[in-house]
Image (cartoon, one colour):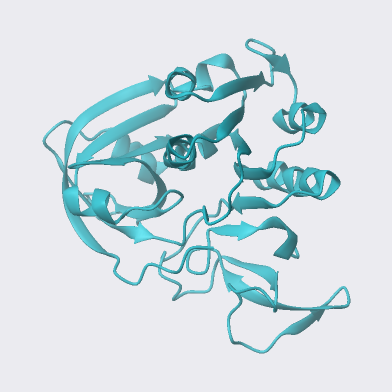
Length: 274
């Protein structure tokens, strides 16, 4: 994985565009040139609600180019509802860029990206970076309904092969996106972000395909900087991402608890012991 970003800082940004992509989904584009320059695909920010009445919330960095960075999120509670009400010109403070991001040091030429729901927010920069290398990129994109398959056309226009699935069958195959992945031609690399049950299925499929998989784990972060240890996941102690803390025994293997917000959020699937 990419080395940790040790230069995260608070960025004072301004909203330059606000779009409601679906009834539950909002895209905020921010004037944030320093954040855009520092961002790697798969990183995130802790967005601070302007009222300071709610804790900061972790949101993936969707776009990062020139002076612009953006966050795309589902409105699910008090914190995201407050962010969704911001208007053009409003100030938004964010801490970032945080996390390790995806690892592109390999030479995979056929990559499957799997996104479930809001997981799509973590993979646009990843898809663009892979396409820039000339790789074939297939996006397996699942959501509850066709309305929530937001920005799918953008990925298609960029050069991805988009394979949609919906729970209600309103677009693409009805059912789980991982079922379609399992029946598809084997890629050389799988990259995924979405709900934990989906990521577990992706890890299983990667084992069956005998290909590596990078998973961006979704979690509610208390601090985003590794201080509270509220977002741990078991990882093999031999991993380059493992902490130096003493290992514990788990299913016959030495593992350590690592922080998703700090050592992650992206991990190699075969190194996780969840």
